[in-house]
Image 1: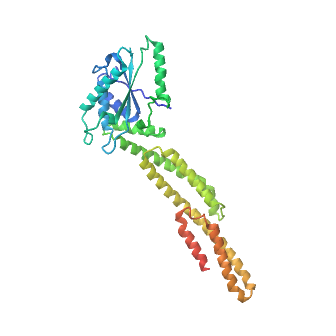
Image 2: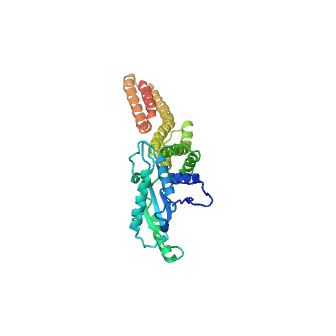
Image 3: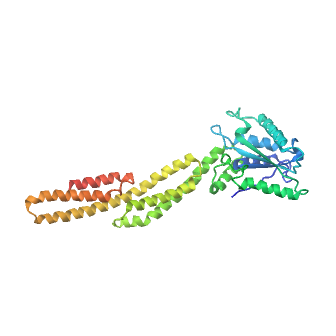
Length: 356
């Protein structure tokens, strides 16, 4: 799916002489778009106003504001669509002239500290296409538009525009919140640091998905928890707990992995620790129930010894004790070491029955 945003150009009648709208729309477009399409008529190439030179200058200045000193923003593809292209001037000549114009504009743009030597190519790539006159050459125009469409829809196309280097790394479910924060910053005229906006978005969305995954784990474990706290033993507890854990983590990964890697990893680690703390008491309850079961079995076996001759008592009692501990460890194996917080509980249970 492709999201297309149509932004008013530099000569909209409704705006008149209001340059503020031009600046804001350029800033917003750069923050949101992977591909920045500029329509320019062939007859105005080489002119200052008609060729959108002022808009380009605004775009370049805006892009520097969107870049932090610590890391460069991802590139933006500037896609020039030359309208009413007559083919009298070769496209290569237009490309050469327009690139030279952009380099000139870039060299005149004030550079912030740390970016004095930055190049146009550090921030932008360019692509050009010519479209015939829509009214006088409708058939050729439609054919050219069909070919142009393939650059946006066919990944196998050699001129495919949505390359990874242009991706803003904003998942679609976070686009609305991200766009709102960017626009608010533009309208309030604050210094817009795009990486900071990405971080805020990642924190916001990962926090929401964290809560969803937490609710999923609670839902998955509700029945198991009820069984355990009612005193019942749960067969294959380890498998049930692992499945509940994996399902909840998969939910988090599916929703959060597309956001800023550092925030995603940190939140994921916190979520795992949170899950461990929730699950450890359930393992402890199971171990205590198992310990009680083994204690009852031990007492039953010991009661039978009262009828045995004294010379066999100590030898048989020792065997019963060892057998009970072995059975406890056998049944407990795999039920506690999946969640390391339960280790101490297992040790306490084991030591208790050693004393027996």
